[in-house]
Amino acid sequence: MPPAKDGDIPAAPTGLKYTLKDRDLTLTWTCSSLQNQEQGPKVEGFEVFMATKPLDGCEGCPFMFKSLGVVPMPRKSFVYTLDQDLHYYFRVQTLGKDNIKSKVSDTLYIEFP
Image (cartoon, rainbow, N blue to C red; front, side, top):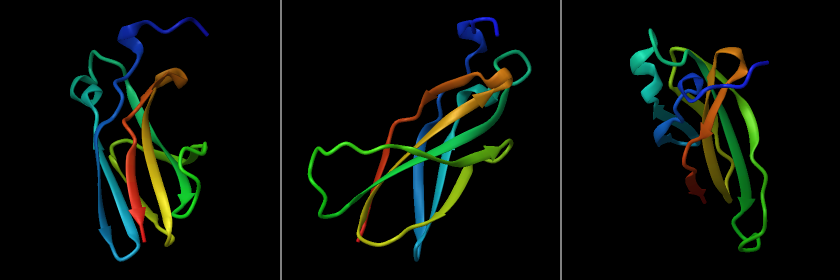
């Protein structure tokens, strides 16, 4: 695979937000690469990552992000059912053509008692 040029790399998602209804969390985001799909990098979807820690877990202990799945275009949202008594961390990454990926979004933190 040839190396990717900066113009081929899609922008990372921004504005990661959530809404909560009972235990169902809906993540939403924006992506500036979607504004110029004709000439800019082609966006094919978004991959959602999550990490959790128990509320009584040790502070500063490492945790690993795991993929929850891929959201195909044109959607920019993801629904997940939360379990109680956990710290949740979510990130989203833009997926471009030929398996080119953006940097990950800022991390969204949620404490669900």
